[in-house]
Image (cartoon, rainbow, N blue to C red; front, side, top):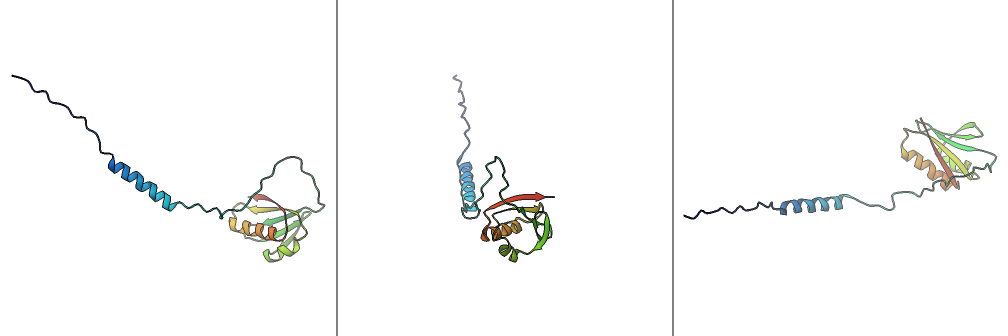
Length: 129
């Protein structure tokens, strides 16, 4: 009598469902992700080096946590509004913006936009606690 030897078949998993899920995830992330090249604003970082004082007056715009604006000129504080800021700072070339660190970025960006529209070329940011 001959003995029959059973052939063992190798079990191979079906990869079709796995590939389908991977493609569905790829399509999902491609549809959900958006790339908007116009959503940012141009930011020039300082190069470093020697700082020279070219202007006599040092201007600083302070924004507190209650969204109140104060203009410091040579450490003398004056309250100011966003609407009148453009007129008062037309001759200023450089200003420092000091803001509360818990303030919304929208407020800071509006202030920087107003400063840029009034002709300020250099804006420095400081965040206070």
